[in-house]
Image (cartoon, rainbow over all chains, first blue to last red; front, side):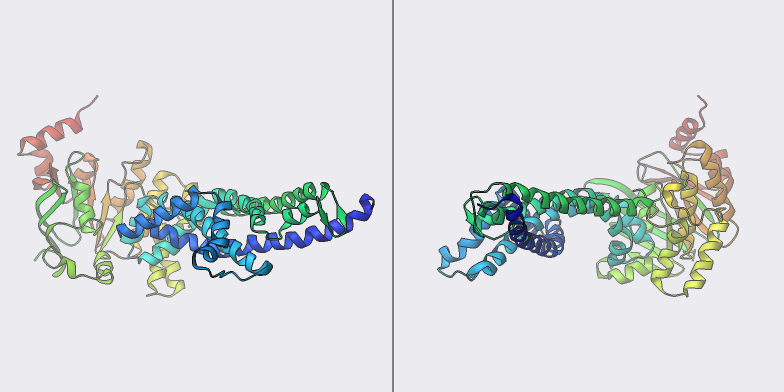
Length: 229
Length: 252
């Protein structure tokens, strides 16, 4: 039986490996969901009724059902329905499926935050731009965008911090993120058996990373403090 | 032909008639005040001139150029509409300054987007306009750091920066504390005399009397009476305007 200090380096490197996977999923989700969410928010505000209704229905389905279920459906669905497992095997296939599920899920949440930001801009701002001869594009980029950003920073930081923790749901399809790596030590992993502390220790990683994010977001909020809406 | 000619403008919101058969004209350099009780259609008329509302029918002709014609309106592109709109400047009741820009940037934003002048020229223009409205010491202040009266003066400078043929004011002092209205009205009065042509929707009767060359009194979507300040205030004809003036001059 190894002592705690003999176990520690082994556990540490295994957890690090898992955390890399966690971070990869986090950043790829952000990269995909931030722009996709904007597109979805535009569709959900479209004046073309069928598109608007369809988009709002998709948002309802995605926000109204558990992300864990969505992960399972996206990972197993194609194979079960069409007999074609499109994700390929192994960790990389599981990662792709997880990324797709997370991007769709978070894009829907982000889209509602964007929508609230866009709709909170007073109509007078658009009119002021119009009477000054600005194009719609100029009004969006030069007038309303920064005001929107200022308004959505607090709800976005909330959602993004939730995303960090939600990545752990991907272990339902055996993605080897940090909770998966910690849990493995409760049975046997890297020659260590029946240890629960590595699983608890994963909390330190989440806290540290979310601590950094919190600091970054409050810096951004301060940066936008120079004007009031 | 008059400088601005408005012919038979109609505007309905659903089944509510907001403007009915509005026709008037004005000359270059004139100041026209539009008075009347709330809901009489004053603001809607101003918004029609700025294309913030589209009239149902009628014509707007400025300097022999047809800016709006109910018959052919649908054929106008966004681009054309933006050009036509630039003949009019607009100062809003609620200022609508861009909060993330300084006073100077608020004034220079639109000209710099048009790219017709160099950055230095635009900067100089912005500074001279802010000086004109008495804010040379506040150029780098953000709107949230300015009082309501100062914000409205920035808004006036912003509208002037595009050299509109006609500058429109939509109740420019209604959102201001009484002690701040004076500074804004003084600036507007100061613009008179140059070649500024102005249309002012206002509840300030004294101001209308002193500054306007002509006054239009609106009630229930129609022009009830039109004339010089002396005619309107000294010798009003219709019953509606008599009642309105009696109310607005009433001392409590």
